[in-house]
Image (cartoon, rainbow, N blue to C red; front, side):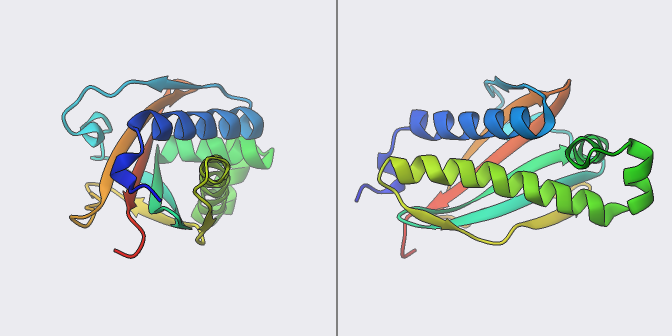
Length: 171
């Protein structure tokens, strides 16, 4: 079984791009446009100085890792309203929990689509339970053995960052 670092970057770029595009197009009716990241630290392209909702789901098996989806709070609320077929006011009345659930589900679907593509390529994995982070001015630091790849998308004029952290099995 090849190690994570032996799999070409293009495989991960292709699988995460396809996953984000499929889920956001199907579930929200919005195209996701992949944007090549040129910043030395791709997360710098996302201003984390204001409130964000971050969904995360892990995958374990032939490859182990996590995918974090970063959304500005207002964009997360728009996504929740679209996904739930509600107005922004109705989602606001339901509160943060409804937004968290919707973003958790979008993240679960995105990582599930990513995982299925890995399985089709000979890397079977299982998903972990989705979780949500909310806050401002925070960063997620991987352990030293992890490989990090960050992908930026634009959906309805809003940025979405997919942060992929992986490490070889058994580490």
